[in-house]
Amino acid sequence: MGGDGDPVGSRMTEPGGIRTSPTAPTHGASAWLVHRAELTPDRVALVEGDASVTYAKLVERSLRAATLLGGLGIGRHDRVATLMSNSIEFMELFYATAEIGAILVPLNWRLAAPELDYQIRDAGAQVLFVGPEHGALAAQLAADLPIRERVAIEREYAERRDASPALADASARARFADPHLILYTAGTTGHPKGAVLTHANVYWNVPNMAIPVGLTDRDTTVTLLPMFHSGGIGLYTVPSLVVGGRVVIVRKFERDALLALLVRERAALCFGVPAIWLEMLKTPDFTQAKVPDLRYVVSGGAPCPTSVMEELDRRGFVYLQGYGLTETAPGGTLMPVEAWKRKFGSVGKSAPFVDLRVVRDGGEACRAREIGEVQFRGPNVFAGYWNLPQATADAFTADGWFRSGDLGFLDEDGFLTLVDRKKDMVITGGENVYSAEVEDALFAHPAVAEAAIIGVPDERWGEAVCAIVALRPNASASGDELIAHCRSRLAKYKTPKYVVFVDALPRNAAGKVLKRQLREEVRIREQAKA
Ligand code: AMP
Image (cartoon, rainbow, N blue to C red; front, side, top):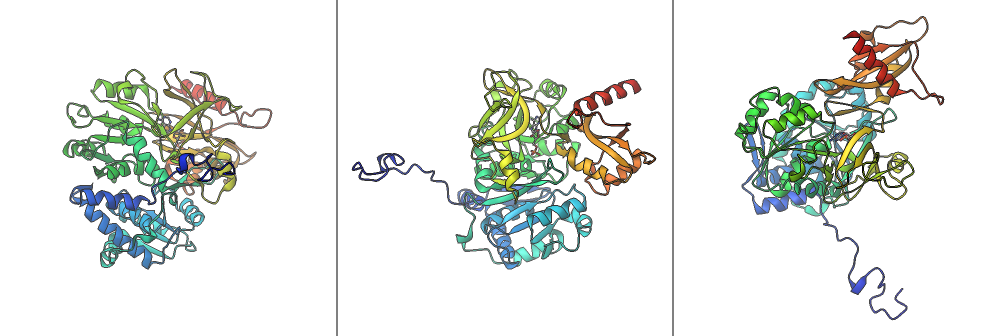
């Protein structure tokens, strides 16, 4: 290159001498917060019950927390785990880890202790912050974890944070491409995988989810989803904090309390999984007229029954459905406001900075309305699974698209409708349960010869976990016994709610369990009972 007398060298890659490589912002999440606090130091950033913090205060506390972490020996790329409910303190640690380039591992407190042990070991977390509600669970964790120090939020944290000087040196700050979060997602192979989100991934979710709803610094959003999910962080906590809005944090969902909160805080946006909106609709007071500031009810994470959408419509709400995965940080699509009635049932269009395609098994693009796998590409797509290069490679196509494992179709206007899942997964109350994990737990029972998991319709949670079990000859076990056995190893939401006994599982010629057939058989049995 440059041999033809090109004075600046490679004309091919640098037209006109201008560098075309992406000039990515250099800093991660803590820099966004610091910047915002310079614009509006005294505006309220976070509200939780009677407590609130301004942007300036949140920066100060986060910098103190960063010093605290440094004092614990935590540095760049070290892992910091939390077993914490949604709280101001959690968000401080979110920014504190960013400030020193460390990686936050927010653990799901719905899991059983052995599941948490696995994740803490897998992530190699050195410090664990334990919220007041989760002391008993933390006490059940294995004694030989790599954790060097546990910090109890209600006793030591605030004291130690406040005694630490605010970190003055920003040179250790995470860069845009650094990993910031490891979020465990249920795995197809039994163990969950740690999806690594970089600061850039988290950042790109901001315009992706904020632009379609016109989020501004005048808006209050309510965060209901647990912050150990990408939805709790990205819908809409971090987007709101980037634009300078106000975020009301909810620790535990309760219908009447949420209704009162939406009214009192004059919330403009609230994101919830469909089970939340189903529950809210049980009170006749949840109407647009009584919550006049709520511009949009936003939903995603699980299929939403049409009846819920219709009822929200009847009550005057604008209901926007979105779709995404932990691996897409999480927003992949969102319904444009003007189209929601016209495109009832669709999960909307790809977000502004997301490429989306629907492909056949062979990889060719589907025609309009032809069902195929939904795939994503874009700066929001995760960096890979923690220490799992093969699983990471398998998650992408040869040409770099992330395979969602969801089946759907695009209509003529580019609106996506989901129809099924390719992956063997049940979604109960917005939580994913991969069959393999529950099946492994069942197989560990000595009486079980064969076991399979399916999702059965559940009025409250969308789907419930149902186990189909064939016992070994001459062995015996009751359904209750198998349920108790699973509960000792698995989170409650993953534990089968029902156990159906069969002589043998239906299998295809290759020996694969025919889950569709099982679903159908269980449906027929239930109908016969009714
Ligand atoms: P997670 O990684 O926990 O966010 O779960 C992602 C999965 O949830 C997706 O792969 C879908 O199967 C499912 N999902 C997310 N949003 C929707 C939606 N709006 N409708 C149906 N399923 C959804």
